[in-house]
Amino acid sequence: MSVTHRLTAPAPGWTAATDVVVVGSGVAGLTVALNVRKAGLRAMVVTKAVLDEGSTRWAQGGIAAALGEGDTPEQHLDDTLVAGAGLCDEEAVRTLVTEGPDAVRRLIATGALFDRGEDGEILLTREGGHHRRRIAHAGGDATGAEISRALVAAVRTDPGIELIEHALVLDLLTDTEGHAAGLTLHVMGEGQRDGVGAVRARAVVLATGGMGQVFSATTNPAVSTGDGVALALRAGAAVTDLEFVQFHPTPLWVGPDAEGQLPLISEAVRGEGAHLVDADGVRFMVGQHELAELAPRDIVAKAITRRMQEQGADHMFLDGRHFGAEMWEHRFPTILATCRAHGIDPVTAPIPIAPAAHYASGGVRTDPRGRTSVPGLYACGEVACTGVHGANRLASNSLLEGLVFAERIAADLAGRHAAGELPERTVDVAAARAARPVPLPPSEARADIQRLMSRGAGVLRSATSMADAAAGLALIAEQAHSHVAEEKPADPRVETWEAANLLLVATALVAAAAQREETRGCHWREDFPERDDAHWRRHLITTLAASGDPVSTPEEQ
Ligand SMILES: Cc1cc2nc3c(=O)[nH]c(=O)nc-3n(C[C@H](O)[C@H](O)[C@H](O)COP(=O)(O)OP(=O)(O)OC[C@H]3O[C@@H](n4cnc5c(N)ncnc54)[C@H](O)[C@@H]3O)c2cc1C
Image (cartoon, rainbow, N blue to C red):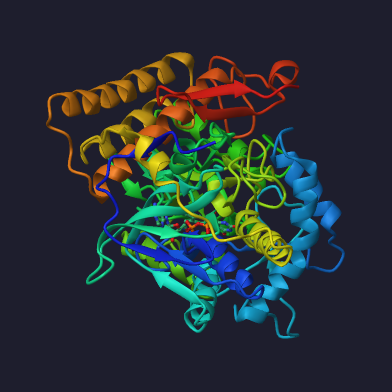
């Protein structure tokens, strides 16, 4: 197998080499880099902006693991399977929950400081879908920032890890056997490594995070443009479960025309007892689910959206006034400061909230060792679909998944290296040149794609809404092709490469979501409101056709 399509870009003007090139510097990427070093392999971490720019540093609530007294991996497994609505890979979940507690302890040994009680024990909170207190947190509500700080500090002190910031990875390079042999990238740098270049490596690890920027309203940072999924598709890899986008129920509502990254009011606020209420102060989750406000996220997001529809409102409220000022200041200092910066004081007023795109449960399909369907190409963290989340991610399982499966990739690479199965690779330059260049949409297409997706493939979906989105996306693609034919192509640069990635990922997502004619997990079809296990208890696998269009095929049952 070789790369069939590539982003339109100038030929590489410089080259570099390493053993393992890791794309992305969140919890997943940095954990891979630190762990492959233990096997004596050199690592290069390539990242789009600065090291801590991904979703990891925004994570608030914490990291889930069976660390508390009376809790067990088996109970964590049960809660994860329930949230995943029949589509989790049970073995992958078992791996997550059994290896998770020690992975968290190793993270602590790396330097991450978790909140502890007076007895020195790690404090654990609850979040939606968890029947136990099992969420470890740091800095109150700044867990991701602390994890990121600790991992960044660790990679910076390791001379065997080369860090390249402000570097947008474009496409995979392979050798004549179709094994990953490196990648092309664009560096906004100075001197030797400036502009488009190529990195040669024995293996490539994608840890590019999520794709929230496909939608107008999201909790994800600007770098979360689905680049890893788009790259994997162009490289011939299989991706899966793209239709399962989790919409967080309680991002801060900042106005009717809000776009881009929205501040998040963590689920932990509900975990500590805040109530969801409508404009009349009615707690509408009570009686809808045994866990009320702590029901799994899809149930809460749907209930909020339904209530908004019924009342013609564009937001609901989260009421935590009963916490009092002291608890807000100590337990949720970041959220308190963010709300106050937006003119809302949660101590005295309920917080306006509305659902927004939050987490991609699907992604590049991997096996339990993190291997994708392209030899030598690995994926972990939010870009990957390990099978852990099924149709909906359980809260705070994603940082844990990033840790556990990053460690497994490093172990696989170490094993292959020790067995002499990880030789240096020679890039098949002819194959790279033969890959078809994808026309680039103009940078303004980003906002158009986001609007189409939020309107057509957001919390509420139907055949009609998704046909509209698909038609709009097809038009953007056609225009990009016409501009090339008219010799007026968009300039290859970060904004247009990201727009091309967003377009491909959005098109693939809509195709899968339109095909799945049922409601399951975080995929909610207004025209097919029931879960349909007879037809749909299976995954949709998406690959790129020769035409460059994504095609989704249901997996055999
Ligand atoms: C607001 C918010 C709160 C959250 N709270 C929690 C929580 O409490 N608990 C929990 O478990 N999960 C939480 N999540 C989810 C969790 O933070 C993410 O799923 C997880 O951090 C993803 O880690 P990652 O390493 O896969 O990706 P990220 O941390 O997103 O890192 C991706 C990296 O890839 C880089 N990158 C992307 N594309 C390219 C490219 N083309 N070239 C080079 N580099 C590239 C980015 O710059 C970035 O460095 C939250 C997410 C958000 C947004």
